[in-house]
Structure formats: structure tokens, C-alpha cells
Length: 283
Image (tube, rainbow, N blue to C red; front, side):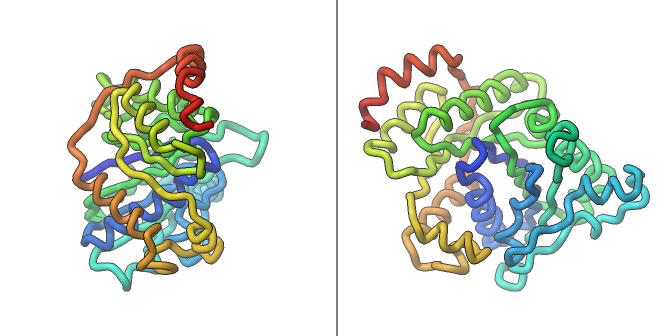
């Protein structure tokens, strides 16, 4: 079973991209579980016709965290798009605490434990599980897929902007730290473009500096925003568009990827100096 996690700075577009990867996998005949690992619990929205499901953490609270009182169908939903694909697509959301009331990573920890206790992987006969994980702060809960080996291959969504690259470096540090213990590896960088000048070259240099590859580029597009606003993927909204073709190519590249590396992340100072040396490319 493929175990994939997509990380990235909040607001960088990782949930939108993750949804397209999961759909493309199911469209190729795979049985896929898409697990949103973000307190907002909106990662699966495009796979559920705009619906935001109940989060696993919220369901657990109602039963005082007694997993024996929870059924698999309580926490995992079938995608509304399943009648359009040869495979099967399942959706779940970890959720999180109320703002200011606890660790945001707790939902991820509890979600993974609950799915394991419910034997979701075997009961759903999964070919792949995709974790969509918030990457602003790589705390204990959000690193669960990395440090416990729940995900074996990590992909980082970033633009060429400094703040996004900083988050990508932090995520790379987590991969490098737990690589020997859990066997996790970095599969590549997904460039979600922001229409900066020479942004592709900046990202290609950044990936090379980390010791990895660019696994795909997603173009800056108003069409992507329009599809998201309608609660649809590009596969439904604009299947013949270049943007949809880019998403399909990204999913194909990930599916066929064999290059997994232990990254060589930069410290903040190193990133600052690297940025000073390369920022003129994006001027």
C-alpha cells in the first residue's frame, strides 16, 4: 500500500492539490483514503461535493474517546465522485481543538490511532492512503505521519516565496530527523506557482539544494480558484483545461516516482543567504 503525505504552509494550496492527486489515483482504479490532517477539516471538501464532514476528533469527544463505540462508517465517508471513477475514494478528517483550547496536532494523532484500531486499511482494502497535513508548525501531532512511519513518501507544496520556502525547509528537517527511524523519504517538491518572474527556476534550484526533485508544477490560474469555489476539482469543472492536465501529470509523476531521498535542509540563516543569492531570479 502506498503511504503518501502532502505537507505545505497553510494557504499554499496543498489541500486543493491533494484532492486532485487522490481523485486521479481513484480514477486510475486505486482504492484510496484521503485523510485531512488540519483543524479546519476541509481537505475533503472537493471530494464530497462541497460538504465538510464531521471530524474524527469531534466524534471521539462525543463518546469520551472510547473507540469501541465508534464504527468505521462513522469516521470514513465514501466520496460522492465514486460513481465517476473505476476505483474507490474514501474521505476522513482529523479535526482539532477549539481555537486556543489545546494542541492542534492532537486531532492527527487521534485520527491515525482510531483508523488503526478500526482496521480501516484492511477493511477498505486500500491501495493508497494520502495524508494532507498542515506544515506551518511541524509539532509532534503534525509529524505523526513522518515519525511513526504512517507515510513513507513526503511531498512538499511550495511557491517561490520566502515564507513558503521557510516552511518547506522545516518540513524537510522533520523528514531528515526521522528518516532512519521510520524509513520516511522525501519524494519531491510540488511547485504551486504564484506568477513570480522566474519562479520555476527558483524552485528548481531550491529542490536541488535540498537534494530532491521537482515532482510537478501547478500553474497560477483563476480557473483553479473558480473550481474550488464551486466545491469541485478540475476533473469535474474543466477536464480539458491545461490546469487539469497539469494536475493529472503531477499525480502520474507521484504514482511513478522512484526517487526518494533524505533531504539536506537549510537552517534559517542558510536559507536567508541562499535567498539573497537567488532572489534576483524572482525579481
